[in-house]
Length: 113
Ligand code: 5GP
Ligand code: ZN
Image (cartoon, rainbow, N blue to C red):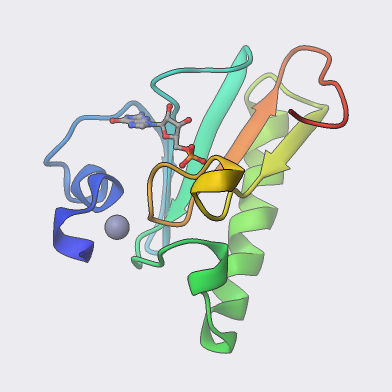
């Protein structure tokens, strides 16, 4: 349910988060359990359950999410960075509101675990 969603509550200000960017469509905030020196999340204000929850009507929004993540990475200590979208519990998704992980500030290995 969108109304009970953790990230919807962050958007509404009902749960505090350390924001680094926001506009009329997106909010970016630092991850509470960072996995790298730079680790923040970029989310749409619109509740989408995850990457697979987006429809063609969301194409521009999802494109902006990626572009903004890249732009903010360079401006926040990560000229080299990784953008991650987890979809489904087996892929590591724990919050079911679409969010782009932006990770950097240390060497990142491949493949991910
Ligand atoms: P997922 O595992 O779903 O891809 O990513 C969810 C991310 O949200 C995790 O990296 C987790 O640390 C982060 N997270 C979970 N709860 C909170 C919270 O209340 N505040 C912030 N800032 N990050 C959170
Ligand atoms: Zn939500």
